[in-house]
Length: 359
Picture 1 (spheres, rainbow, N blue to C red):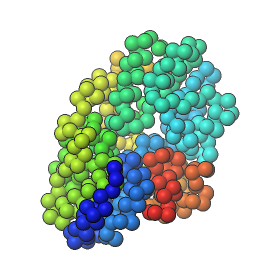
Picture 2: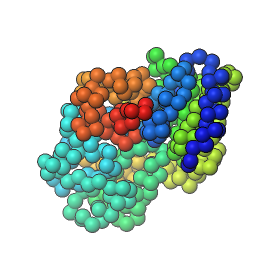
Picture 3: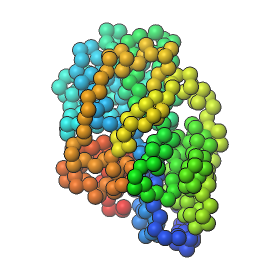
Picture 4: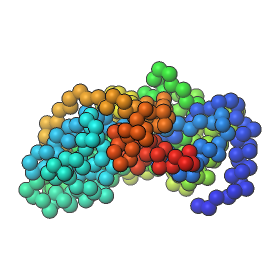
């Protein structure tokens, strides 16, 4: 989408006039984080308006003890671990130890572009156990559910899902309840909203009197959403606004919602930076437990801490900017990442590094 420079300049001027003081606004989606960095949006905003990254990067919120357990499973004989590319580079509690490293040591690890690809690998590898690492939020969960249902239909008994899928609302509620929470409004994730609907974020103004705007991913989409948040704060009238109507309806994608309800049920889950949260994860329903990798391999999680100087958990909860992490750009770079925020294509640290000159 080409920039409308006159419209943008007018909007920024009006925003400056409306700013009631220092404002801290959080973008929840990792794609928003990357788009904001790429377009240099932070440098355009009034100096009083600060944008913070939230827990919207699926790889980033996956805790180190889960990665450690994945690394251990990857070394099992006749097991093929499959997932998206970002997951293969995420280190566990030991810096430098990742699925890519384990692959170099002989583990069978495959990158896939869709969970259905993992089902096909299972059908073509009858002597192997194929595990798909399902990471993501409500956006990717329906596709993951469809893959499990496909495996059931095609009789791929050697396929299993390790569900690391999470839901956004419980995480935001936990974040808001944290000591020291200091966010004035939320830029809500357009991708998640396409599934759960605009109504899925109504709890922010209703329960917490926090402004919320659902936004698309073009620079002008994001600037408009920030403007609307500032305007709400100026007027002291917090509400939910859907500024991504070309993709997001009020009630969301009913078919995707039915597939999710058919395949998953909420469960307790652990988030990096937020800790354990009730009913925040998605586990397979009992009738699909035969495809549950955690049950099939009797996965146990040991206590694990991230590398001591890695502060990814603070970055994804808006308590620290990437540049303030003592490892950023020194011990931790995209070529040699210490934490997942530098690994993921949606990570706040990766965005800050890649677009450092225009942030």
